[in-house]
Length: 509
Image 1 (cartoon, helix red, strand yellow):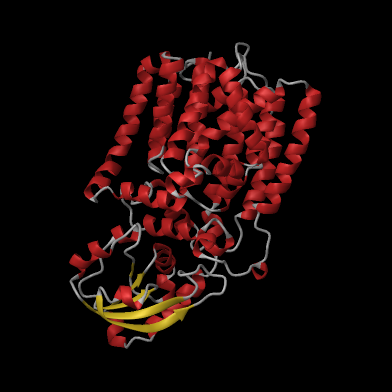
Image 2 (image 1 turned 180 degrees about the vertical axis):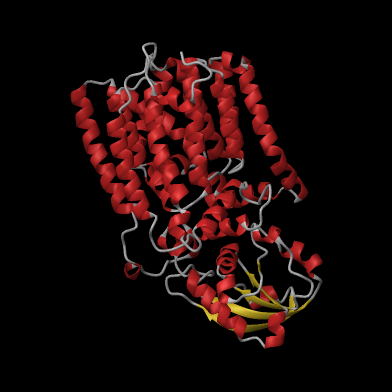
């Protein structure tokens, strides 16, 4: 058994005479992770900034203990990378690539912790590496990618605790949980599911360990400042839940939650998830980890019923995938080869063909609608320089006296994020938006009597201004409809109320 002062790295990768785990498949996993990392790095050099990346940079420039739709960790990370490598969207994605490579490696480590031999470890690594979800998270810096890594690390710590009963792992779990809370508010679902499953099936000893509750205390303390921020701003994160349910279709969309999630994880992973659930519930070999299979099902059920996105809780899937690989590796080798080899080949072909962005911009046709363009696709990375250029030209159309008291305002937060990022170089005034997090960043100054408004309609803007006049037009052919395509830029003036009164009414999620 590993002592409490052994480092996590040594405890994870070393073997001793008392260690029941099989040897670590270092060469195979390094080869898989290396190939995946190369493809991920090349994929991250594609067209330009993803709109949420620009939003994270904007949030990072306005540091806070909380935001409307995420914690402070990713905005801080985005701002740091942008400060170190100004204007480089490729460098911005280094943490995303590193996180995805770590998911591949840690997934294989979980397979080893579950008793999987080299074949099971390698199969688990291949499953993660051929996942459209894991590769997709490497292509842009996102809260989902960082959150997934922390969930995978957390499940590894819990799985290892079951084998070693080393309470230092539970304290480490508290630290990982504290970090995950700074990314998203999803991780409590994991612990609720684990506690319920352990209380039902065991090991109930887990619930009696003081280290578990000390770790929980660390996580709660880390959440306090974020909760205070939410309370002071009217709990906007709860409102974001309604927005997400509207985007996913609510209860009707729940029917597609599991199929869509398995689709994004890929063919091989989908097969291993099904096998892994069966193994965790029925295998005597994995009986000590049976509660984690139930916890997995509870996590999926919670996010499915609540209308969550299919990426929610994605970090718990590698544990089940690893269990499936361990189970398959125990089958007769002839049947394993017949079943696994074609599945692996198809998974590799599918992820390379459909997830890697090798197409030239000239090969794209205009997006049919906003929903299609806003999905993780090339359209969401195109048109931002053009938006900055057109908005700057419209701003310069104003008389010089009005330019001194003007501000830029946008209908959508994604427009504001792009303009905020390019504001200094383009010579634009401060940028505001009543949408999403931008609505909580700051209120326009009372001296701002002229607004260059990007998007919206004359009828809607007339609710707030007495004068609404077209000033320019943004119509990038491959842009997002209503955001960088078919967009009017307006000159608005004559506030109907002071900004301090009007802004809370304009603000929306």
